[in-house]
Length: 216
Length: 309
Image (cartoon, rainbow over all chains, first blue to last red):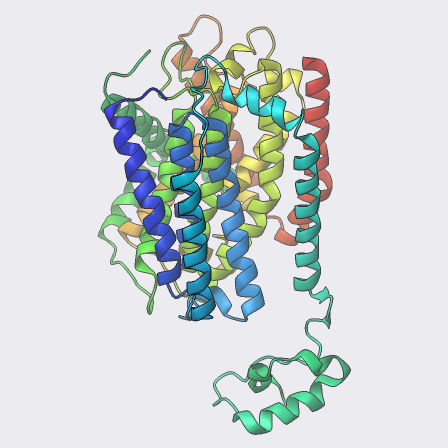
């Protein structure tokens, strides 16, 4: 896109929006909201990429992330036993590790940004970036991209195998019973013992917090 | 045609969406009568959507306990905006296109992917069980139709050797894609019916969920939701007319008229199927989509690619 005032304004607007929504990912209290703030951040980056002439990459980023963030939200809800994710829960854990990792990562990136020697090669505007990308993907970089693709596919199949009803840890409904509707939740102490008895051989990895769901 | 200001372009897209969705609503009312064996007077069918809209406008809004109000309001806006993006990429006549960009088909795909976010948020943020189930159903549906949709659009781009919708329309000068790629349009119609969650694939707002994602929405908010899902249907029809039926090309009549006729024909076909085909079970559709529709769409891509070479 040729440089002009509206393009510059849009660049900074979407760049700032991207950073702001990335920060909001950690300020919200629900996994679905966190996932969609992250999507908003990615969409902002996608617009910035479009403004920087990488139209295809920017649009594909939005296309892929819209699906991926939704899938991520659903998988998180499935794994975390938090139906719908509307129940508030904190999104930040391990504060000290997170702080150290954040500072180190920021310092590293800032160092690269300040002392890095970036190439100054203005691209030929007549060259179609989409066609160039296609040649790269199916040319020199084909092995790398196909390797990454197969790895990601294996990861997805693995995640499905764990999350599935007949997954890695046996039948998902083994030893479980519907929660007692309209009754006060059983007290914790007795429930844990009951869970161990009812869950049987596969019960070793039951979360103690779920014991209230079990019938004694 | 270049646009000196964005306002006329936005007005054009808005007019296409509003007029298209009204005609779709009229067709829907007329077909409902025809299917039931009633005699529907034309004037009655033509006014019914307006009456329905007026009723919704004066209906009291309902609410739920602790919804995510912002996400709830965002959902229909996302659908309407993404439908507008989709329509904007399509040339509406020989020299009128709002944004016939070089990667138009990718832009359309990205916009339609965001529709999934909109429908899921509409179900999720109500904080109510039936809408939530509808939202989850739509994710399962969307993950099943997305791949066939993307693949048939890619196949249509192959003979044009371009991702621009205008170039795809031009590439059908001698032979429409509906003939050249016989698998394309049927697969696109199945995917598009799912995308607009219409008729047999209306699993997320279905009667067996008491209205699904829309069950807790009434009054003006319900009107906005029903409008925006019709906008998506119009965008599907307009894109289908451009990619498979030669777009604005045709004899005698001006290009814009041909475009309108073809888009209306596709919208009418989807609406008619909605009245004639029973709603499918989602589990069954997911299996069919992944074991039949995606392989067929891949065949479409490979055959189209081989012919285009």
